[in-house]
Image 1 (cartoon, one colour):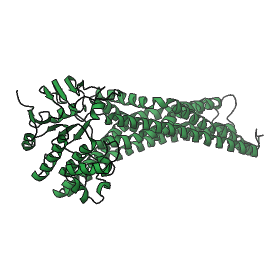
Image 2: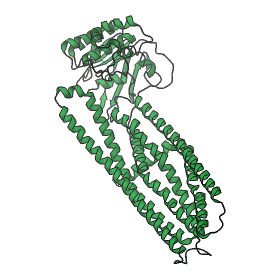
Image 3: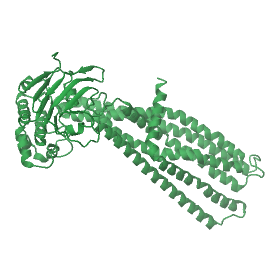
Image 4: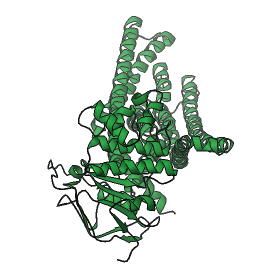
Length: 565
């Protein structure tokens, strides 16, 4: 365990650095502008100190009251302008980095194979891309500039203090380094707490998405109270983790305030007694003057200010590293991409035939599934049967190019199915899955997604052939109804008939259907079966994975994946 944690921390730190690398130039610029803004307080303090000295001991000031006031105001405006420019540059850099990471996540998830094991839920991915990535912005806006100021401003003030009083420099030198030591100790706990908080946020989103999808079933099963209880427990866990992060953040701020207050107080005590003549050591050739003493008093708080701001932003660093660690874990997980993306503009004009030779697949659990050699002619109707776990759904995914084919070969339309041909092959496919999905648009837009242009007559014929026209008539908005991702408002069988209608409209010449009649009553299953046969009647090759023997017997051939023949 002791070896794993440092490795995870190093991996998170490396991933965060990788995320920020393209914006490193802008972040450096923002940091140096921030440093310059902080250093402008030194001449401002000098203006104030020489005026106070002139009022107290009657000495001649270098600048008159009006000149000093105007210079102080000009320096203040310059400081505000530099700080604003620093924040604007850092904000722009943070948004660019977050946008780039979001695109990478979405691009990777878009091409993720549906048969890959260990996938995160869509809710967890959405939480990471939408919510958690935003936690990197405070790191870039506050922590990075604060770290730059901590590395430079205290050293400059320490050097200036040394010129006037070695005692004040000694006080600052002793009090200052204690702060980073305690910050490091607190920071170890802060990162661990932030990582646990990130996990709870992802789990809460996954729980919410899962329960929303099953809302109808939960109400039918009278499990609403149990669901509310689950949410209450999850919310309480998230509250506890959030409070733990806040406790650590407050602890780090308290420790820093203590040491900075002691440092400033000790400086004030020394300067006060030195000006009263009680302490005659600590300054160089001459006793400490009023102007020098006031100047040192004004600089002392700003010696600690960058470290105070760094401590306030320390939990931002912990949160950013926790997010970077989650990104690293996501990218390190074994993920399979769908075939395609070979940027080959070719089209597959051959017959819609399929051949499998020596094809096998290794599941995420390590089990090897060996498929029989199969030849399917164009226009043939095939039923793929076998018990659950025999590989029916996996075989359909391989035939669609939704997973790479590491062992064996698949030939489609006379050519090998690989990255060069997969996109062109999928352009000819119609897919009917066990759980239909609808994108955020009208039912009409979902049905004609594969069509070249809208044709209402063709769509009406497709709905009629799929026995889905009555479904549309019962919807409140007809074809303009939005069903939601999983088809809220229609039953599972009705959703599958709509998918059959979409396949009919698309003119796909090969149809892959995964358990199209499972969990349906006999009447609905018969309607779906007739729709599939209507697809094959126009010449499409039909490959159906099914447990339904009545459907299988109506097709041309049955291939049992568990058969020894």
